[in-house]
Structure formats: C-alpha cells, structure tokens
Length: 275
Image (cartoon, rainbow, N blue to C red; front, side, top):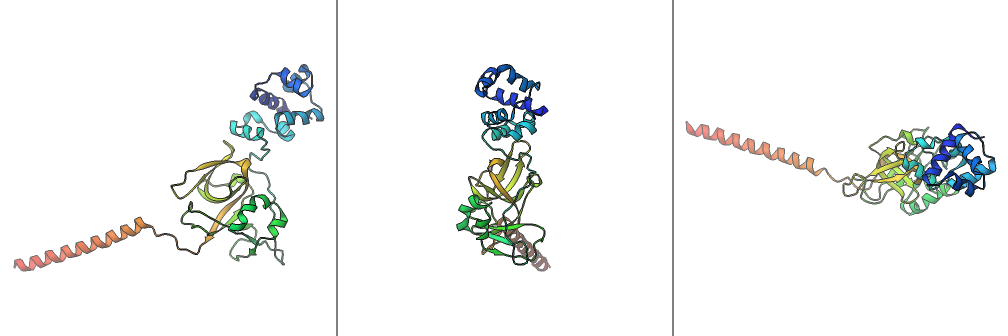
C-alpha cells in the first residue's frame, strides 16, 4: 500500500512539526520501532493507521502516498498543512456547472453586480447557475466555454466601473500567460478582474495586478482560487478616457508647425522688403 515517497513524506512532515519519532508514535498509538519502519520503508502501515496519519499531519492520504513533498516549496507545503488539498500542478480537470439552450449549445451566463456576492458560494451548483440570465454571441468559438461578469471599481482602466467583461474558462492553470488579464474567482475576494502572473510552480500563488497604478499588486494562494476565466472582450456604456499624453503631443506638433509656418512667412516678407 505504501509507496517509495511515503517514508520521506511523513519524515518531512514530522520534522516540520519539530517532533521526534517517539512523540509521533505515541500520538498515533504505535510502537516507536514500527513508526521508524514506516519512515525508512521497511514496514507498511495499515489503512486505519494511514487515516490517522492523514488526520495527524493534516495532509490527504493521496498526497502522503503519491506526491514528492520534499520537492515542494515551503509555501506549497504550508498550503497542504492548512488543509488545502489542492492541485498544486494546476493541471487537474475542473468540472464546470453550465447551461445550454434548446439546441444543446452552450449559453453565455451573465453574472450581474447583484449576483457577485453569491457566486463564490454557488459557482459549482447547477441550480444556482441555471437562474443566471443567459445570452449568445455568435462570434465566439463554439467549442469553448464563456461567461460574462459585471466588474466594479476603477482598478482596471480602460475597463470602467459597471462594464461587462467576458472570459473564456481556463481548465488548466498552467496555460496562464503572464501579463494577460483574467477574471479570477476567489473564496475571500469573490470576483476580481486583474492582470495575472503565475507562480503556481514556484510558490503555489498567483500575483494579481491592476492597470491603475494606485493599486498595489498582491498574491493569492491557489488554494483560495475557485475559477479562472481568460479575458476575451468587454462591453461598456462609457467611452474610455482619452490618452492625454498622446493628445498633448499631437497638439504640440500642430502648434510647432504653425510657429514654423509663421516664422517662414516672416522671413520671406523680410527678404522682399530688403530689396
């Protein structure tokens, strides 16, 4: 039942807790010699003992047996110890609750501002998703899943407060492209629209950045992430703010040309008078 990784995994978890083999053996109600055998691979625990070990170390049996915990970062191990039995690779197939029309075509569900608070709780509930308003956009790919969220705040110009942002569902978080905008649904912050940088492999986190420089970037643990949607387009009732620096440059060029023209006319007029 035990695997070659099991012994090194429980040894690492024991040492992280600052416990001796004797202390862990007492806590698990086994002999110290037996526990030592589990760590060095000369003995295999029963299923009941595996369950107790999982509860003691607060790491799932699957992780104890299959994952190479010493190869993980400090942050990733911390996620596991805090009960975050998550897919640290970002590759796990994620099942999405969705709706279809009468012809079995995927709908685009709308998540308005008033529904955002409940979305983090009902995102995986087919009944909750079924009551969201739906529509279709014929120019979107038929083989991909889309959802539209109403965004609040001023952290992502030129996307204004109240705009509707459509995203394509991301199953494999390893495909996240650094520096690109995504809709990220988290347990704590709900729905946020940010530019994302992935640190899933290194630290088990995502770095979320705003295009508005007054907002500082921040990290979220992948254990806190529920869904990720890649930005496709947005719909807004307001025109984006003009690029003032570009407009000012254009005005400067016009003024410069006018001044050069006036100077040239003055020189030509002076030349005629000199005769």
